[in-house]
Length: 328
Image (tube, rainbow, N blue to C red):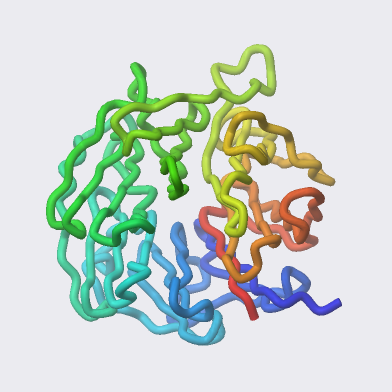
């Protein structure tokens, strides 16, 4: 049966690859992105499922035709600034955010001009220069922007990114604020989620306080059960997935899933044990039952039934840092 979605995989040292048939065959992007560059960030435009942005160490690139052709958007990131996250405003797709190392940049004209945003992150941090691993435009109000920092917790802007406040610490250890993944689930009681080396933290008061859930350790001697990326199921955000592993990069991993907004968790039935932490996910609202996940060391898993069953793709990569799904 023909698969009606495309998978994008961004790698460190392996550039960007995409599969227009759900993982059966693959194409490597070679121009204008060099085939051996570092791609740590991918995002799909909210108003156009065939338009996608890739953030790399060599700048920002965009495809308007589901990955077939790419254009280079001139930006300050061209000058050897690592891009760790990208986001597009769902109400104004000309507004683009790039989370960098450190801080972030914003374009209000579709990527023609950029301005630096000073979040005020602590430099240096326990890992040297902090990385803005997540930028999220709040689905309730596009003037509210959230940023997750590795390592400096969560920052928030109420004016579209002009000014920022540092939200309260997520826990007593600095690495409680080592933010890896981040999601917002709007609703009667909005929840903000972040992942870190300690697990998944939830805030139901706009980031003023956090409640951590720690996953089981893989080995008795492990310090903790490490977590990286996360994803919400678009047609049922009570279903969440968290990428988990014994440490970073780790020698094994797991996909943790909840069907009840984090009250209980199970382990996804993966056909092959991961060779490292499960690092990142790819999803899309138009294909809500398709969930893609990758281990840091290149295993790619796909579920087409919302996470009940999984297949490991034959294709393997080097170090995977970003993923995306688009409908064909």
